[in-house]
Length: 131
Figure 1 (cartoon, rainbow, N blue to C red):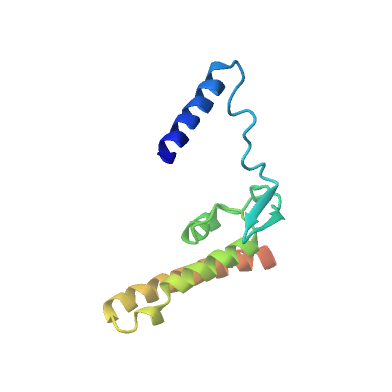
Figure 2: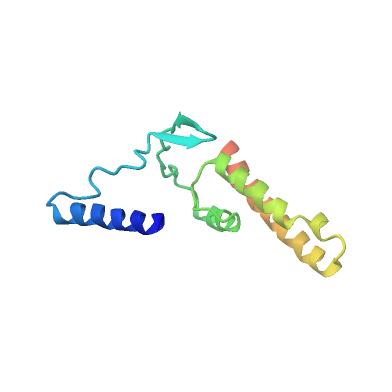
């Protein structure tokens, strides 16, 4: 019987709210995005870091293929190139395919191509020369 009273009361509250001209959701603000709750404690939410597009510099057209081999847009920083090289080498390193010789051969060829592309880019950033 108590459950029925609960739903009747809830219906009365909704009727009162919906019959008025005020927005029923105006007063309800569950999260103002300035604090967060975890483990019964409220803490301040750090502001989001703005996403900025990395500045690119003009590069010789001969290096475009090397940048594409690393999966990057031509002209990104040397630091970004090194991070992409490390990520790709981890995925394509031949030691990961030691038990499967056919895939190890393909991985070896890929890792050589990735490393050569990175070396060309790094050499250009250090010396300004392609070879």
